[in-house]
Image (tube, rainbow, N blue to C red):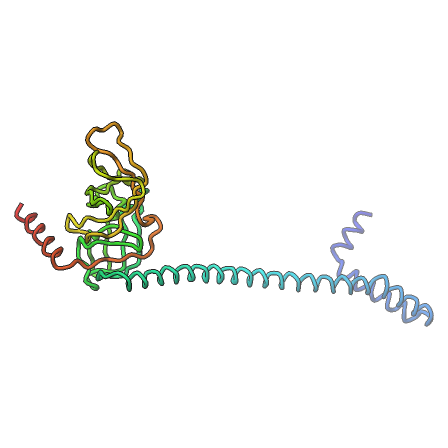
Length: 277
């Protein structure tokens, strides 16, 4: 019996043709009423279920194709919405930059950050302006809310900016309210502080601005706000924790400040002293 089943499976096409031919001949030679009954039986028992199954398979195929198309359209629309949101945020930043550029009396060069320091502690960035826009070494770099760093290397169309997060980058500052002078420092690129003489009037909430000393930043540019004061047992100095005026880690656009003539002359004198040594 098994060999018969194997034979039928192997030659199933021929067997199907023979069966169909045999049924056809039987129907042709049968009486009309038997032919009608057989036709109805085949229609309801075989052809109709087969047609329904075929229709359902076609619908399922169409639904799958439509679902795939809808998923592709959803993915495209999601990407477009995300792009529009990013463009909206960028437009807001650019509008603020334009407003800042119009409000400030300084001669500034708007720039965008094109590369960042890959080290764990972000110490420098590369901006898209160089000698092609008149950028020189030691020019101060600022953001909308305060100082950001200084130019340390200039290329034809790019410049390297040393950020205030770099522990080697120190800035001369003063308290706007009392004019007490100090140095803005950081040891880890996260916490910023300045030391003042123990008798000087400095309090939490005081605004810190650049002092104009050192030949880099013009006087009076915002640097941050005093968060708290601690003496740490020191009889001579007290330490002021300072919150910078800008979020260094989220910078995307900056301004390079063109130095006025006195700063350029001062820098030239420093360079000449360095060459003589």
